[in-house]
Image (cartoon, rainbow, N blue to C red; front, top):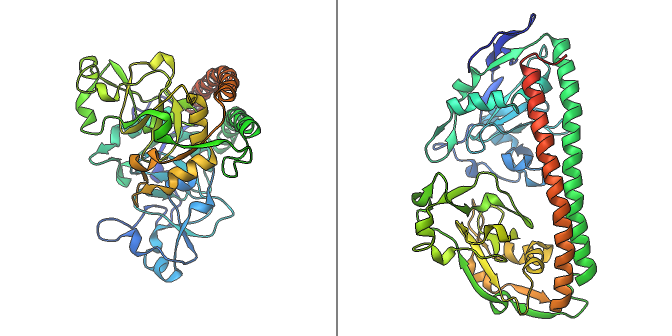
Length: 408
């Protein structure tokens, strides 16, 4: 990273400089090719932390444990409350604090931890690791083999523009206020989803009990087709611009995420890949990662394609696409999908099993009424999305100004 001129009183430091001067202040996990995490997991009391614990705040229920005896063998990789945890393999750069209420734990090989010096504001460093300045440095040190990764040695040399401690505190106060606004926006988005779920249960009842006595049908019997997207060497068809091809990361509950889209050649989309060519109203279902998550293909992506996703083409005479997608995203729909999971490390949805999934089938007229309500909420959701992007953009600008010393 290019070191620019800093305001008076600021100085360039490295991650190594701002860590506590104690043994193992910056350290990664011990597990690798010669030391397997699976050999250590048991019913002990020392938590093993992973990136899964930080998907939406700290998720304690996803913890695994090792015994104190095994912990002593690998205690150099111990973490304590207040340490900063950073992913160095896979989700490179993802960072969170280890919560104050947790006991001493251990990290696996894909994470590293930093015990930050008491002379430095921890939250200042946390925000810096969320900034585009850090991402720029990260891009220069990441190496990709089977998955993206960077070395702890390179990470220790990360340059940080460090102001005096009172200025650090003031910057953190400003960024905390801006971050609170982002969180409120996210909470509003979550409330919209809860409202839609509430409407679903109000209109159709609990699918598990089926107290309204709706007809039950197998998914294959109410679909024109249930197939799968491109699975053989999809990257060989990628082009810089062309036909959008959706992947698992693009499918969220009831909505498409258009970030990180890939594109395929239009010629092959109409020929050898035409089997997985999408139509308006098709339903995309995630197979791997968050299996069972689904959304409907909107009209603007008629003719697009997808990669390793299940494609459901509903029979419109008996089932509405939006209703069916919401059903698949319901607790009952997800429970059926998860029950058919295969795979140990990475859960995977079997297409044969999803064809057998049982759907509660209310009258089409009632389904379509729900679809209209959903469309109205989606229009509101699009306005929320625009608002979210604007807040994120302003937050990024604010951080850039903060770390360049341009905040008054």
